Amino acid sequence: MTYSVAVSGASGYAGGEILRLLADHPDIEIRTVTAYSNAGQPLVDHQPHLRSLAHLTLQDTTPEILSGHDIVFLALPHGQSGQYTDALGDAPLVIDAGADHRLTSASAWDAFYGGAFHEPWTYGVPELLVGGVKQREHLREATRIAAPGCNASTVSLSLAPGVAAGVIDPSDIVSVLAVGPSGAGKSLKTNLLGSEILGTANPYAVGGTHRHIPEVRQALAAASGIDADGIRISFTPVLVPMSRGILATSTAPIVEGATDAQIRDAWQSAYGDETFVQLLPEGRFPRTADVLGANTALIGLAIDRGANRVTVVTAVDNLVKGTAGAAIQSMNIALGLPEARALSVNGVAP
Image (cartoon, rainbow, N blue to C red):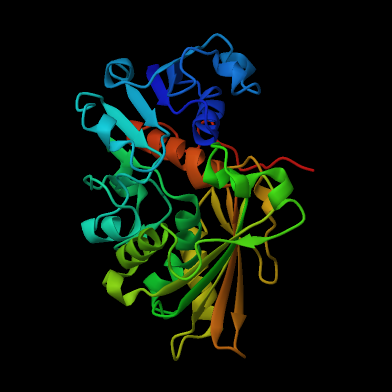
């Protein structure tokens, strides 16, 4: 069976990456691409690397144009998806790459986003532990999927095994992330100009203000059964001069009595059979270059007995495993297709 697809926000980074991956999917026909200010222009004027889709023209983003497809991807700025999802009730499968349907708490939405709160959808991180099973079990036959925030899913995948196994204390988590500017989208912003980011590293959303914090707390609470109020995290992203990538370094205290073997086994048990989330051998740590273009999260684990903390270093491509790859992996599961179809574990080097 071939599924017809519409992709909104197709002129942006997330929309473009969804299209790049879907272009090689044998079960997908990309029928419609939409945009806002770029409507009426050829797709390749804005995504010149997508040569196989040169025949497509960007249309207006309206419920009428998006409807009538088997699958609709929404790659819109936060707060803008809800107006369309409310009108797409008849669409068999809708996947939102924005934040509108990620959070289960209306108060958390109000505190970090504001505006209309929309119902939470099935969270699109298949490997995440949720109540003793993997999230992929909840994705099977799902019809509404919320793709994750790239920083949030990276930190959640980093720490969920230890929290779920009870070997680390989730009340004192510290995460510092080196991130590329593509995670901020394609809109022109002065702080993302080449002259502003080249040769420097710039922290942002410091002091508990980053919008992905409640998403991390929600995911770790679901993994452990602990109330989200018991998950405390200091979360500091740092903008660095690489177009793609996240390198997240997260630490948490070791629970009294947990042995080194028990700690490492928590991550090995969680990810030992996974294709796209891989625990590296002891003493090895990933680079963002190793996951460029791949739907892979590589994890390095260190046990720091001097500080009595576990350190987890995780690398992802924010546009693939962090966004588009997670969305398509979740789509494959929901449709009963091979989970890895059109997705690669191999990065691009050099």
